[in-house]
Image (cartoon, rainbow over all chains, first blue to last red; front, top):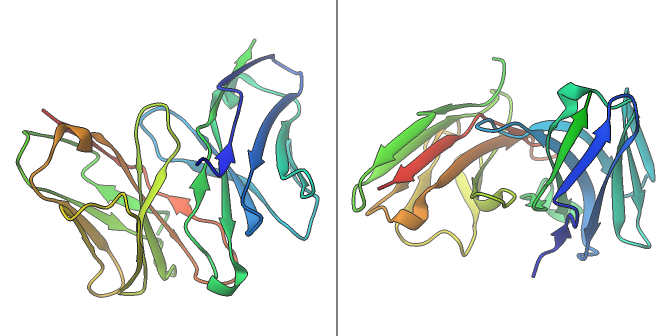
Length: 115
Length: 114
């Protein structure tokens, strides 16, 4: 039973255009969501997060949108750059009463930004 | 202190041998997590600590796996009698227990069991 799903294994985008990566979750107890970027043979690097009390969070070229009713979040990268090419993981954490809980990850989406 | 560190970065071992990995978290973080990642999958939770107390273990963590954080600082993950199915990237992350909920990951230890 996969609680966090990234249904697109890969995405190709031209340099300068918008990249949109999607993520769906099933567990309504999740209340904090994160996006990580991963290069081969390295650990995941934190990009941006959002709490369930918000519906949007922005940091430079990266914006995360959360639709709680649809249990869906998306990461927008504008403009996309070749250095953004990597695997992007959506992760979720839940249960405010237990603090910072272990993360549940999706399987990742490989983004290729073509120059 | 610039981030989470892990040692070794790579380990090749023969089936049946024991291996031990080390993780040094960000110094002010009191929570430390171990995850495992296999090809084509996202990281999967194994176990985590708050200070020296092990708070939760995943059902993925068989009896051959043991983790410690004796002084609430660095942690070790030991795999006894390794099997080929243990080949994976072992990732360590750290965070605060409350407040900022972001987990920061180390570079990982890639294990290959022959």
